[in-house]
Image (cartoon, rainbow, N blue to C red; front, side, top):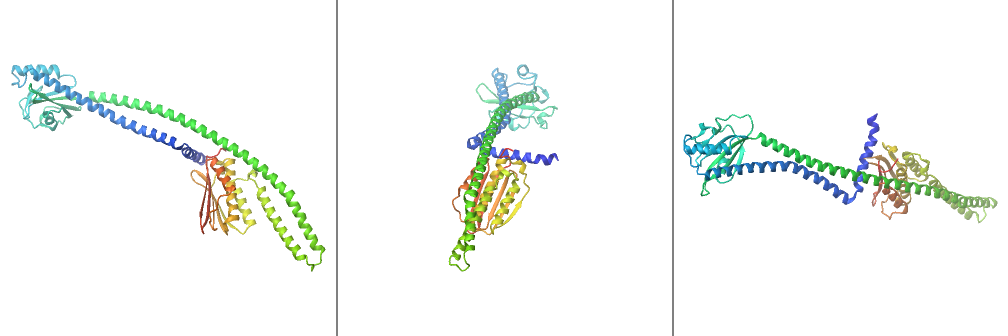
Length: 446
């Protein structure tokens, strides 16, 4: 039961969103697109900034290692001898002071031919290995870095359960020529922790900005909704006032026509019939009196039909479907027009009075136009609904000649548009006319 009762509310909510989107205008849509674009840019920045920070941190470490290597080379400690030589010991002391400890787990000094001339693990000293692509780039003068691959032969004595980064920095001699490459292996967990902090702070800043923007946009949306709601209430009040004024005028007009025209016309008809009865059947005036009597009856019949049409107002509140049925029944009773009526599953309770009035008025004007101008013999009237609108469609098989819209259709269109509805009239010569009136399910206040 709750799902069934909530369906109209969901339709009204969707309809309200669609109507509001249609009414916010170009500026509002551009602003909304700007907000969506800003959110996309924020997400891209949230991903890109941590990566950029990581790249810069790694490049800075590689350059720092290269600077340390150049300082060591400037002290004349390269080329070096065997691990037992004094120059090797001085180099070892400088490296231990400058590079070893903390996050550093291994230091190697490579020559251009792939020989390890220094390592904190002396088992590697004097060994020759194939240089990795990163080491070759460093030999060309570019500090670089990569994740450690422990499967390489130069890492045969290393077994680490943590992620390790390898930094390769060129070492220059006093003449500026690259004479070797420092390889420094460092644990990546501290770096990853720092990057996690950076990533968290970036997303926190972006999230705060998006939240502030969301609050601001929500406030604007609430304000716009209140303005729209106020406009609709005003439109309904104006339509209600117009409706009551029209009903009063209709009643006055019906009374005036009935008393000032209908009764004298009836007396005229009574007098003509009395005159015919007073004269002999073969009197020369009988044919003219008979013609005038028939003409008076036709005028009286037409007048009474128009009075019935004027007298039927929506203020009787027959309901939307019943009002449409009454319009169809009246047209079929008073004309030779055959009308096929189809009423679908329409929740009339989801519409307010002004919306019902607007739809019924549009349907009546469409039927009147068919009777007066279409030269049609058949028509189809359908009352139904879509996900967003309640729709009245009226199609005829008339001539389809498009004529300028009269005051009735203009008024019907203005009523519908005042509450967010529409009236579309499509004519095809020789194939009839289609009237389609619609109001949004939430386009009127109940």
